[in-house]
Length: 144
Image (cartoon, rainbow, N blue to C red; front, side, top):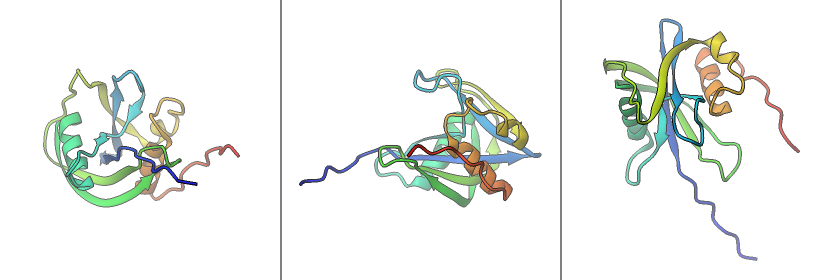
């Protein structure tokens, strides 16, 4: 029996924390309209994951960022894009929201993000924030 390879895009993003709040972006695209996400996007062919995370931060929120530690790679199933999240600090630029790609960008406290069940693009957002906070991620129900 021949096995088929799974080909999925790779996503890279940043977790930005300032004054006790985290920056999230609100999606405009039809697949995730209105949901909140980390500044993140697909890794281009020939690009490193780290470069993609820095580029996406600049494109999505206008900030030049310096990457810190890698918080993790988040993937539920082989057909889901692996999402690489990095701790990052703002090194320059100013907050801007490209209206062709996003609805909004805002700073949220940990508690506010924790209460956004059903409003986040994926579980990986809360998981990455929990790692940065040094907290255990919330338990998520798994189908069997």
